[in-house]
Image (tube, rainbow, N blue to C red; front, side, top):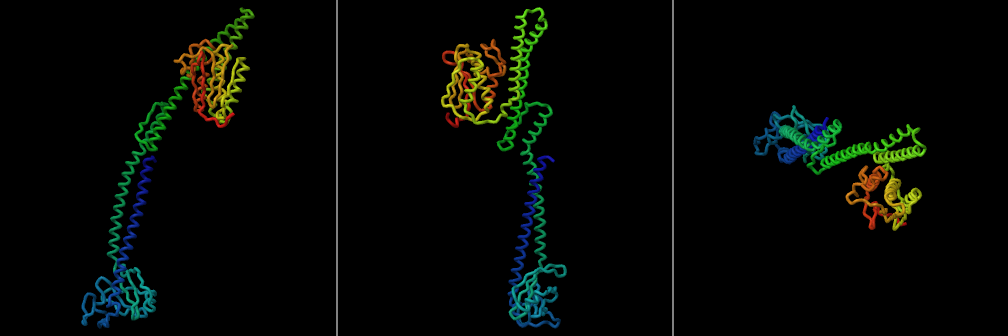
Length: 458
């Protein structure tokens, strides 16, 4: 069952339940009001002097009945009752002693007899006589006994039946209109969901990520459609980057593999070379193997980004940078100075930041003269590495962060062209920035800024 049909059924069913409840409430309210009107009529009629005073001394006819309603008695007194009511008089024993001729007899039960014998509060009840329902009032008389006044409620029941029929027709018409409106509303509401479903099914079938859903609303469904478009754009960008990475990687892997294959082929003819030549070929093959290993490791880092799974922890940024500087000093033998001005404790992925600082410091050592010092400054969440290398042309400072891109001045140096790409990936993972600036007097300043505010001061 589709979502549109479910919405239609929910709305129509809810409306029908509400309408049925309203119809029932109207029926009960009208019935009570009509019954109350009948009870008021019976109460008013019970106060008629001809009933309350025992008919003013009138006696029965020879047939035992009183004059019919609507006639005038010989002494000019009022008749026993009007034609719209049945009246009968009970003595103290509950026996009917007076009644209207040619009208049905009202039933007398034990409760009515108690009222005739002992008095008490008037009693209303509904009875059925000869297939006709009557509303009956039994009330005590001042001189003893009781009077019973009944009125047919057939007209009341007819009014209720007519009202129920009309309300039922109105409810059915209202439910039909509500269902039609619910269908139109559900169709409008569900349309973005249907578009999402069609787009998702098309993508699953064709693997095409260039789909786009038109967003014309600002509610939750509109936001869902916009988020879906954003997700598609992100997936498309990720696929494009992945494809570019594969293409670039295949291109970059060819160079060390070709050189390594050449050296191996030459070593196969080692009997024609002297010892110095063989050592040179082995050393060259070793260098190519190391570069190939570094390239593969960096490609794996870029492709998997396992650093994103590392939990953040509170570290002293100055201590972290100092450990990287110490390792680089031992490895390269270079003079590297460290200044920790106002360094603090921040929440980062420690090994990821360690790798980023290492890559920047390694580049500084690689592209600057051996006798020039390298300065590292840590201030708050900002790390600066300054060298005296050849520098980077202004139009290449943003390009060097692209995968496999190598600045013109660095193309003669060993490297994969992935180091700065890894740095940018790590920094963006932390919500920070990295940039390369020109150093006054020559060289480059690599500035890594993390957004976290230092929590404590060292």
